[in-house]
Image (tube, rainbow, N blue to C red):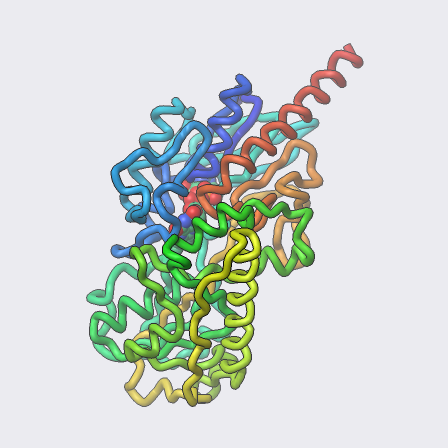
Length: 409
Ligand SMILES: Cc1cc2nc3c(=O)[nH]c(=O)nc-3n(C[C@H](O)[C@H](O)[C@H](O)COP(=O)(O)OP(=O)(O)OC[C@H]3O[C@@H](n4cnc5c(N)ncnc54)[C@H](O)[C@@H]3O)c2cc1C
């Protein structure tokens, strides 16, 4: 059975960032990847997707964007190419086509089984992704026959959907981007919006993420968040990677998208929407105002304010058997897939319990989850600092293990 000091599971940007940091400390490791490097950017993104983070924010340990368009937004294929180059430049020891099928504790370390053999390691880093599978609510099974259901991970472009109207469920980044694309393609689109994070693309002449980065908001630590559970569940920002273009609910309804409240149920083929749309829009407006106030306080000057969300008279029901809707897009979020992790570190809802990525199982680490250690932990730009912190903890754990061995020798 081959042995190494650390097994990293997943060769997305987080796994590669961890590999870079471990290599800098000469910690022997392998990166086990079920597909190719950057698998999720190759297999789970729609054709038109661009990062919502500007190119200058594409920073990893030992890598910064040096292209000609720092304010542009990379396509998914460009992200995949960038990560492939990064893995090559870092000489990351990636074993592709190696799906991990189980991780168990064994003595002071772990046994990691894969489709290509079994590894022994003192430490394991779970970098298999926070957005590995779409999180579709159970009520999706009540959708009448004849309606096509897709998720953002399976959707590619409007031309692949059957002709007819589309109901998009969810108004976070994926939902608003797909509602926008489908509406522009000439489809009648209804968007069911629950709680969402309204965001202008630009503020006072700069990308909103420039302000959030500059004033330190994205660096806020997990120990500074008032309600960490809530902070870790905040929906993604309503942003699209298109220079200067804001795609919020006002923009979408002006373009012809019909807004409805959160999908609350499906009964006898009728989609039932919550009447909370005015409330969730008021909350999103309020939070946007607070964000801009924070930025203004940091900048020492005040800027423009945006018109409140115009809330139309929204439908409370939509008959899915009427023929009006041919497709439902479940843009209801994503979740990790860790069914192969056979170590008791889960809470009752199936999430890994961790303290900034450090689990209760000594030597088992997690990276890439929302607000893992910082507000930016789920962004590419968050991996460098998180990987550096976790590498330091992991190195300390190895030192402690070595000390224990010396004492018992
Ligand atoms: C639609 C979408 C758009 C996003 N846009 C942005 C953006 O604009 N800017 C930004 O900064 N972030 C963005 N993100 C967030 C984030 O950057 C991505 O989710 C990113 O892919 C996460 O990186 P990761 O390395 O944690 O996970 P992943 O990229 O998902 O990598 C995990 C890897 O683990 C592998 N894996 C999983 N299970 C196993 C197993 N059992 N055995 C072996 N390998 C396994 C997978 O194949 C994959 O390659 C976006 C996310 C999504 C879903």
